[in-house]
Image (cartoon, rainbow, N blue to C red; front, side):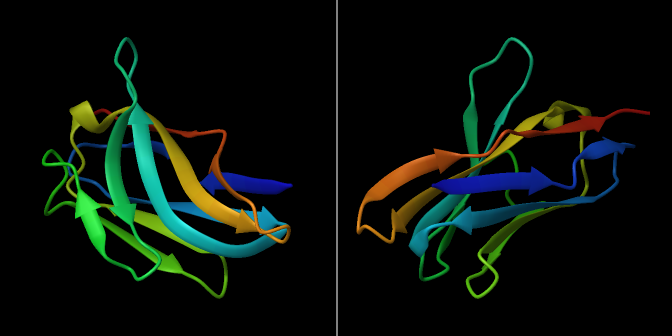
Length: 120
């Protein structure tokens, strides 16, 4: 089994910063691409940022220049540094990973989500 667990969400004022973390654990052989998604109330889940196994990154236009995704392969962690937060960034943030387990099976996994609220 593979688990992804997010942490680091919370309430922050506009213009503030938060750092989300996602820890992968379980029967992992390798982790390929990892992503952060978010879902605001009444909206569809959207891709925020992606990072490949080789650490190439991609961002949604709405967060470019403000958010930074990174990973630590040794620790099986992925991070999302969020700066200059805006009220429209308020959402539940989900970690997603494409993981090969020790039985050589590749599957997609999701974390349980962490709430980010940006409000004064």
